[in-house]
Structure formats: structure tokens, C-alpha cells
Image (cartoon, rainbow, N blue to C red; front, top):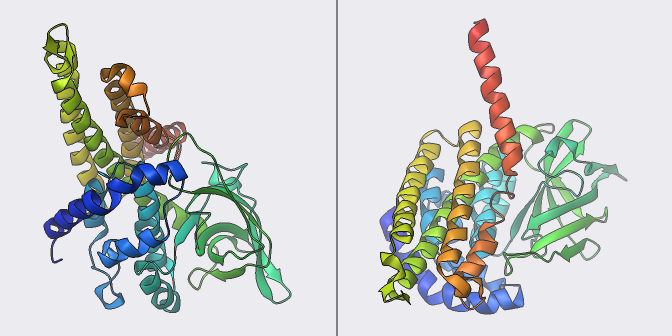
Amino acid sequence: MNDINDITEITLRFISNHIDPFIKDWEDKKWFPNKVFKDLAQQGFLGLIAPQELGGLGLSRSEAIQWCLTFGRIRSLGFSVAVCMHSLVCLNTILQHGNQSQIKELVPKAIRGEEILAYAFTEPNAGSDLKNISCRVALSNGSLAISGTKTFITNGARATVIITYAKDDSGSSLYLVRPNSNTSRTKLEKLGWHCSDTALINFSGDEQVELLGDKKGRGWSQILESLSFERAMLAALGIGFSETLLEDTLEYTKNRQAFGKTLATIPLISSYLEGFNKKLRFLKKMLEECCDRNFEIKFTSAFKAFCCDSLLEMADLCLQFHGGYGYSTDYFPEMAYRDLRLLPIGGGAREVIYDYVYRKLNSEAKLKVVY
């Protein structure tokens, strides 16, 4: 695979043959097999941004985000997010902030699917308010020990390495935590994203813990960088997923008869469907702008919030245009709506993001007046 077009073609073929046929079974079981990570690894999908000398494809982060538009076409947003949290967000964090020993040890195993990665920010009493975490790492009998609880952790029930944001004697840092048999990991029941495990994690204090990188006290700046990239990834996967939903809806409305004509010929419905096409094209252009700005936190956050609200609105109407069938679990819109409903929450709640962006813009406006 030498360019992004080759990867896109291979990805679509792999989705059609090896992922989508199994989604319903995985959704019903509320789990997809860990072996799938190794299947994806054989195609190179877990090593998109890893350097070629470590076994990866050496793509840029922007190219990987564009690939997410294709990978997002999978009929389970929970599945695509679980994979990309491992292969893009977590791997990027290790590549950006790990030391050479950690990179050489973890990256090849992660892109082969031998290690499964998760990222633990959120706590029961600290959701988007990440400065209010209580999870802590400290020395105990000469070794680092972690105490506290994390929740809503994608891949949290299956991960072999959890990148964990915790307080320490330098403020806050990122740590590599290896859960063991004493680590309590509880799968959470959810409205959507059924085949993707989301976990509540209680650390026991005897896990293997290692500082990510060589310098403590940089946790806050590190997670801001990770969150910005994650928000672009969530938006891209959501756009791809919504393209699949729109295709299904177009097909349904072209064939569904009502009062002697198809639904697609009803002016109100046809205008909405045309508008959805335009909206998706617009969102793709804005996603390109995020990439061109190197995932600058303010712009990317604002885009993610707007994008995810737009996709949810579209999903609601696609379900509506299916009538009673849209509310049935036999049709895709019901699941699509449930899966897309999490996007305005995950990776930073919309209200928190809008407030953050407003305050940033307001402070910048005041600085312009002063200077």
C-alpha cells in the first residue's frame, strides 16, 4: 500500500468482507473478539501513523484522519471508535510523548494487535472537568502505585496497557498502567456502541505503573493534544458512518411507496436529503481545515461539537423518513441514531466545548483591544 487511494480501496473491501457481516452478531453479544485486532493488523490498519522502521505505514496524522472517513463506513460506530482509539489516539500519544525504549517496546506490539491500548481520562466525579481528577500515582515501597477510579473507558475491559492521566508530586502526568487480576474492570451497559466495551476501572494499587516519557508534570498539555486529535477522529468516523446511513435512507425513500409515489419525490423529504448531502460535503471540507491547522485545539473542538450535533440531527430525520421501520431494530437507522447520540458527549461534552471556545475567543478579543 503506497498511497491513500490504495488503502481506501483495501479498507472498503475488508469492511465488506470481514467486518460488516459480523456486526449484528457482535452487537448482540456486546463484544467483538480480540482476534479482530490481529486481523486488522494484517492489513496494516493498526499501524497507519507508526514509522515504517517500526513496522507501520508512516502516514501523517492528517492522512489517517482522512482514512477515518472510509473506516467510519462500518455499520457500528462503537467498533470503529474502539479500533481507532487504539491505533490512532493511543498510538499517537505514545509516539509523541513516550521515550525511545517505550516506543520500541510498545509500538510494534500495538500495530500487530499483540497489545490492546486504552486511554483513561474520565472519572466518576470528573468528566469533561479533567483538572478535577483524583486518581493518583505515588511511590509505595520503592515502586510506583496507582489509586483511584476511571470510567467510560473505551477498550477498558480488554486493554493490556492503559494510558492513564493521574495526579502526582509534580502536578499531573500520563502513566502506562498494566492491569492485572486484582484490577476491577466492569463493563458498562450503554444505549449504543454495544459491541465496543466501555469500562469502569478500579485500580488495586499493585498494577505495573510506568511514567510515559521521562519527565513528570506535563499531563495537562499532553491530554489537550490528545483530545484535539481524538475530536478530529470522532468527527471523521461520524461523517463516514453518516454517509452509510444516508445511502440507506436514499435507497429506502426511492423504493418506499406512499399515495402512489415514492417518498423521495415528496418535496420536503427530497429537500432534506439534498441538504444532508451538502452538509456532509461541508463537514468534510471543515475536517480538512482541522488537518491543515494541525488540529489546533480551539478550532478542532468547535468543529467537533458542531459536526456531531449536525450528524445527530441528520440521524433523527433519517430515522423519521423510515417511519415505523426506522424505530425497528431490524433497520439500520435505529442503531445509527443510538450510536451517533454519544458523539456530542464523548471526547468532551458539547456544552463544555462551546463554553471553552467562547471563553478563548472572548479573551483573545480583549487582548487585541489592549495591544
